[in-house]
Image (cartoon, helix red, strand yellow):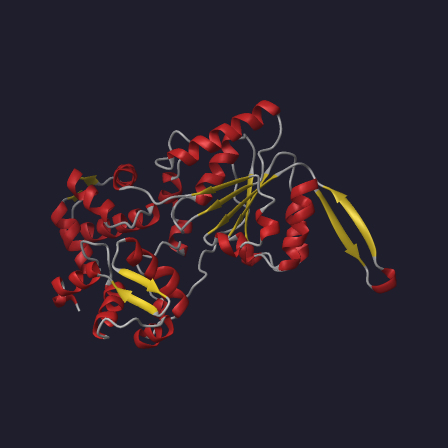
Length: 352
C-alpha cells in the first residue's frame, strides 16, 4: 500500500487578503489533516469515480507492466488543482503493489535533495513529484539520466580536482503532476512515456462523489440538494467536498440537523456569498469591474490594481472558471465581458 513521505503544498499563489475562497481548488492545511477526507480517497480504480478514458489507458499500461514484470513507464499527470492527481498516483502504486513516495518540487531546493530521494528508492517503487514544473534547472538535469538510464551522474570536487561519479539506481517510476504543462521544459517532458490530462468532472460524477462523502460523515442529503451542490462545484471534487462540509457546519449550528435539504443548501451558500452559478463575491466584483468600464477591454494589471488583488491569482484562480462558463473573454487588448456575463450582472444587480 502507498505511503506518504512528505506533505503537499499547492499554495503557489497568495489568497486574497489571506482569506480562503471556498471555490478555490487549491488544497488547504485543514484538508491535508482531515482524517475523513483521507478516508474518502478511493483505494482502487473501481472506486475512483470519473476519468473513464484516463483510467482505461492507465489500466492497460499497468497490466502490461505487470505482465512484463517491470516498473510502469514514467507518467505525467496534468490538469487543474483538485481533480485527483495525487489520488491517481496512490492508485497506480496500489495497482502495481508498490510504495509511493511523495515530494513537492518547491521543497526540492538543492540537487542533493533529489539525490537523497532517488537513493532512497527501492526496485519498482514510485516517486511522485507534485508541481513538477517548479523544479530548478540543476535538479531537473539530474533527473534526465535517472529517468532514462536509471543512474546518477554526479560531479564531485571543483576545477582540476573535479571527478565524475556514476551511481546506479533501481528501476523506478517517476510520476509528475503539474497544473502548468507548458511550463515543463521539453527535455523533461519528453522523458515521460505516459502523459495524461485529468479533465473536469461532470455533474453526475460530482453528485456521486458528494453522496459517498455525505454517507461517510453521516449526512442525510436529498437528491436535489446533492445535484445543486454538484452544479456549483466547478467540475472539481475538492470544491464539492469543501462546500458539503460548510453546508454541514451550517446545518449543525443553525438548524441543529444532519438532514440536508435544497433550501438548507441555498441558505448555507448564501451565508458564504456563493450564488447559484457557483460564483463568490470576488468573482462578482471582477465581473462588475469590467462592466463599469463601458465594455472596453481592460488589461490584467489594471484589473488587479482596481480590485486590490494579485494579478497572478486573478489569472490562474479567478479567470479560468469565468471563461469556462462563458462570462469572460481574453483578447489581445485585454479582458472583455461576454453577452452572458453582461446578462448575469444585469440580472444580479442587487449582489453588487
